[in-house]
Image (cartoon, rainbow, N blue to C red; front, side, top):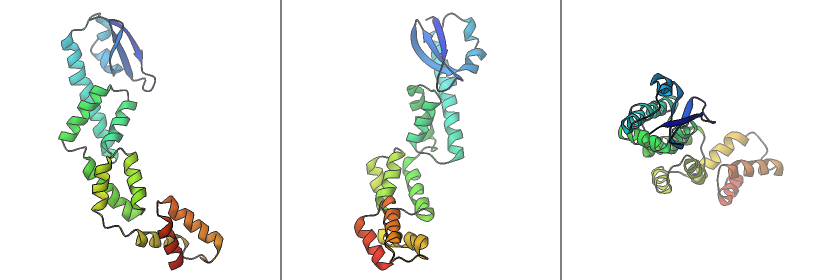
Length: 202
């Protein structure tokens, strides 16, 4: 198997695309390419390729994943997307994620529980809005339903509390203020029925 060409990745110039026998074979960090003196070697064995994949690419992808998780909690989907942007091949990413999951560093169930708990404390929203946010982070619909159902969410109380906090000092009889409250609560996913009840209560 002959290395016929190399090319820097557009999204990450630190990664090289390696072509073997005129076909794309894999990507690897440019520094590792030079460290292994691959530029001096015309041919690679299957053992060489396996070593690059197992001992360099997967190991590095796992390290990058750990670095991302050290900054903040992330879902499996978020780690996968970040590693894709860093230029790792999908098979390498999946193996790295599998290892991170087996080590307990990636756990979507724990992530979703913590996310909802913190959201309700810091920036309360409706069940619908919370579900949408989790969905964007790649959490499955079954897990979303399971997690949200475990929290006793009184949406009316939440809506009233955040509306009172933001608009309590205003004249709620003013139609303009009412419209602002409606927009504020609707943006956070509350139903029209709950919004009307909150307006009447305020």
